[in-house]
Image (cartoon, rainbow, N blue to C red):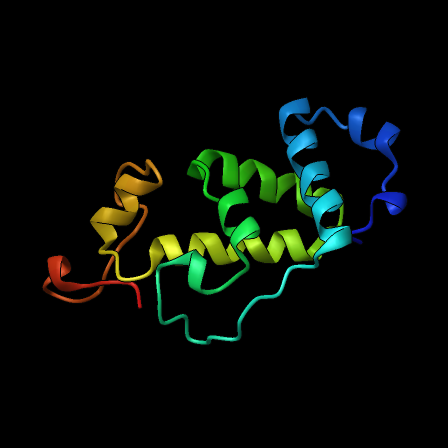
Length: 128
């Protein structure tokens, strides 16, 4: 589902999701109706620049904080908006590209040893 006419706003509003993110997702759906998202096939992802992977409007739309990306992703998943889930996942993948475990911990505000690495030299490990 990506189409506004398929969305039951009453159910969404009663779900307890923040209206800020409901409006953000509805903005996505309105735009998607006129210009559907096209993700350039690039597996594995060879860039950390979302602008090289999707149309400009979508890149600008998802250029928000990690916290906002995760909240948008959660709501898009709840609303069954697959293309928006894909966009948020792609954005997170570009944020992880070429990062060390320590950089990922910092970016996602993760504390402790939640991310571990089996190699002996942890500083040289990156996510490709």
